[in-house]
Length: 77
Image 1 (cartoon, rainbow, N blue to C red):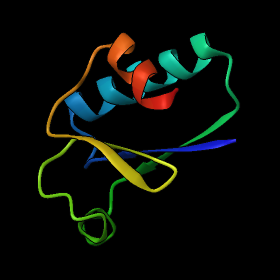
Image 2 (image 1 turned 90 degrees about the vertical axis):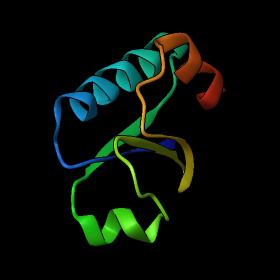
Image 3 (image 1 turned 120 degrees about the horizontal axis):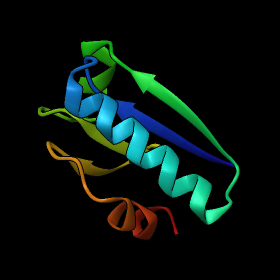
Image 4 (image 1 turned 30 degrees about the vertical axis):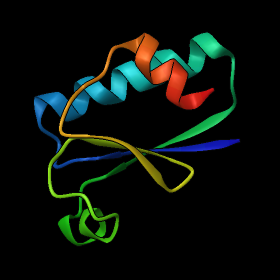
């Protein structure tokens, strides 16, 4: 099971990234756990200075933008 983490304070872009990530994971038919990390201290532990960000199994894959569902699928595959 993949651990997907949305790093962000709950802004519109953060919500969009969460939706797109969930859509990508579902379309790939993968088992996943989606977690929203909104605590700034926790976000900084990932070395992320701009939100939103996506971490897959603890590795940051994208920072400061919302990629398309297809782009996210490539990050998850």
